[in-house]
Length: 262
Ligand SMILES: [Fe+2]
Ligand SMILES: [Fe+2]
Image (cartoon, rainbow, N blue to C red; front, side, top):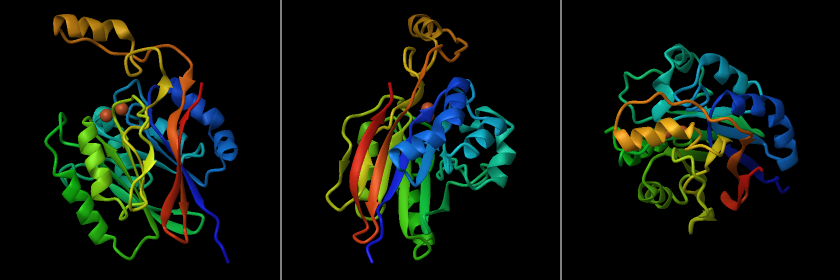
């Protein structure tokens, strides 16, 4: 019997409460319109750019999002620390020191399949965390035999680090995408050994600021090097992400489609 392909929507960094409200209202419709079986979303900027609070995380997980990944901004809201310890459907990058609250990978159920979800952070132009390549290798070894498919959110600044991650794990992880830059890249593709890949999903939030933030304080900071307070810019939410389709028989990703609403 042929089993149906699995479709997973990956959603780029959610920026601001307007985006959280948009997803709360529309996620189930988006799921059925795209025909996806699961949604993974990066939520590191859900609460006013810096961080995600317990209430936003809970709302997103109750609104059709199966798992939240994150990145360098995950520590912006103190109340998320205990939530990270209690809830395995939200990840912080796996390569933080072991003392950091929460976990960097977990296994979710998608249409009866066990899907290993991993989140790591790059170290080029970001904090000097553990080597993300070696962190992923360790997780794959530790979880070997316990999952059917796997995916990875590499939260990183440098495109080279993300592409290297893609090719390093091509054929060993089914889907790999990048987050963090908030700018969607047009390089979605299936890598030679069958991994679905895109360097950056882009941002889910208002598109007319600077990476989702009000422009003036950021321009002022660039001009003066003086600290500024950033806030989310006004505007309609645009969802950026990608839909990946895996064929369970061949274990290959057979399609990657970039999404940008509006
Ligand atoms: Fe972000
Ligand atoms: Fe980030």
